[in-house]
Image (cartoon, rainbow over all chains, first blue to last red; front, side, top):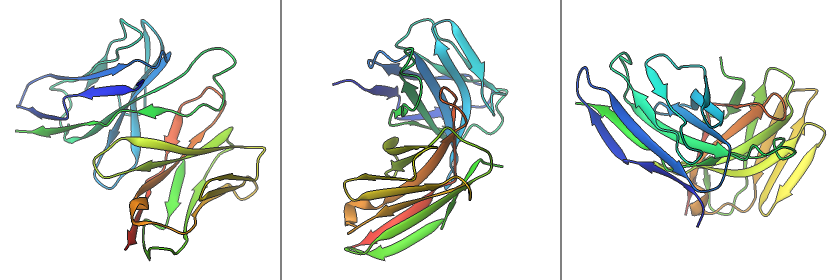
Length: 117
Length: 111
């Protein structure tokens, strides 16, 4: 079955440590997204990528970094510069093929919950 | 502030009743989407309504869009305990643009 896989499900970060969250999709989607969700809140966009080897900052990119070396993969690194990393992180993807851009929903993984030790 | 704002923030009803959630937004949009999130899980797409549409149905879901009032509503009819979840509206400013999510409505359906 096609879908988005996020790992790990739970992650703990020590002071001054960088951690990387994995996101893999086998939907052949061009666009991928990372969101942060705080308790009882909506989603805020961290980074997005519309094509391999290209990505753009979202609304809250400070303290985070991404790469998009393969179409299937869009890992997110939470750096030590992110002082309040405790949150639920969601990865999503969407088809980006020409003429299919418009009005297409995003497909989400099941998230990674990051906490500080 | 967020583009979409849901109302109410929380809603508790009995099984079999209808649940109505509202979403207001600030700027012109290309489409508006509703998603559901079960506790601790990712979001699941429910329905998309384009800016030139006024009403859309999918099973027990009915979505309306009033672009003059910049608002949308999601109606779940004959609710079930399994409908218990958070519901989010998300707006797309243009066809290929990113989504902006509201804060969500937490729905509890009591058996």
